[in-house]
View (tube, rainbow, N blue to C red):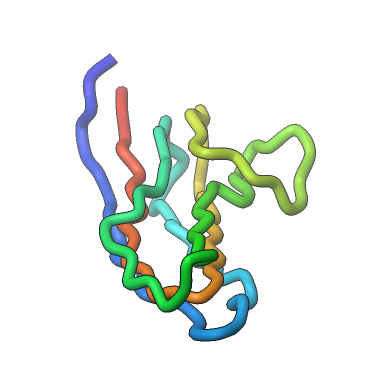
Amino acid sequence: MAIVGFLQTGYWGGAINASSPPYSIVHNFASKVNVWSYGAVQQINCNDDDAFVNIWVNNFDGAKAPGTHHHPGVIAKNCAWVEFGMETTDCLAWAVLTSEVFS
């Protein structure tokens, strides 16, 4: 299988002296595609020694159990959308969310 396209979204969020609510963002595709989706943290600005960032694939078109999940990534066939999630505690974080389309 060859990668024939991709979609990347930058994501900036955080909370200082608190935990953020979970953020979410969706990659929508014009038609159903075969996709490999994952998130990667690019930068963390810590406020305290207990700071953390969690990023995941929350849900996707074709999931066998729709709802909230915490997948580190997903490979899906005939997929029209992928939803990512991120939460932070005591830091600001920059993440890149990637969906690679393959044949």
